[in-house]
Length: 122
Image (cartoon, rainbow, N blue to C red; front, top):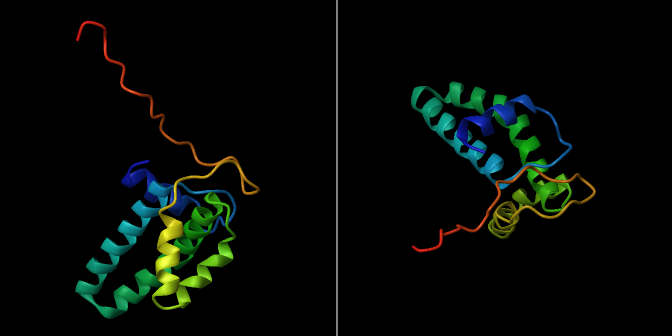
């Protein structure tokens, strides 16, 4: 999943708290949110606040789907409110690889990692 596809997916699933989200989907959207916030803050605080409110729900939704991907409930996002330790724990969870099928679904489609085949004679 690339940058644009991730943003489209997250905005299309604006308030979808069910299912699973892959690592690239979550982190590309997080980068998008950061960049949009920086640009909005350069113009005005009011615009930055509006961007924050507009992207709050999709951010919570993709965070929930990302936690579902590793087999955790979306309610674990409340750990963000615990300074330092909670932040470290959330980042640790969010960088975990996609888990096997669980109660939240079969998981996002991942690219195949076939080993490189070298032709004979090289």
